[in-house]
Length: 257
Image (cartoon, rainbow, N blue to C red; front, side):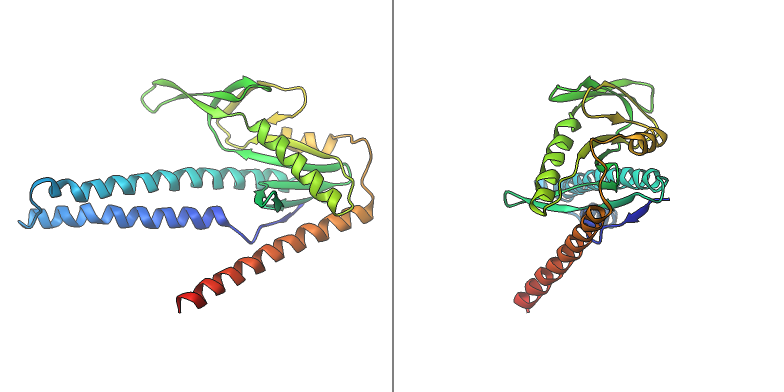
């Protein structure tokens, strides 16, 4: 089994928890107001609908929580699939790279002697259709009552190709010349992907993901010293991000007090 280096950042889980907490706060206001209304205590005029408007804001945060939760579930499914790779692979979650004063975060980066693989994870369900060079794709779903509807999603290939470019440049700065390959992985078991690609693979099953990575034939195999250098870079960067985060939190706390 492959080694999974889990990120210490967990920013998605933290944000999801925050959104859920905020949603519950907003939901509590109309609930309390309804109870007080039954007891004969209520607001007059337009102010009567104000608590329910706050409940609507709570729904917005609950939707944000649901979206993040779906993303987290997709990443957990991807981790489960990547963990079944042979033990000569190492998988890094949530690697962050600075690019033009912005932080680029990768869902998963798989490292083996046959290359480095950037895995961009999606957790959409339904049927996904589109072209490799299109700016957007179509998601077709069936609702709970049997109704059919469609939704437009961004073409994830464009982002993963950009991530490949960012990571390859970052490693070159560290004196590592390695082939970086991008993969789009739809982790939801109920998804069906109808997208034909020539350059960047779009995969929708754990077995296909594992097979693609393990059978990939690169232009040149990575040497053991390169693998050790890459490992030390990724682990050091994750620790540094965690230290910087703690320093920032301590600075904010000191200013407040």
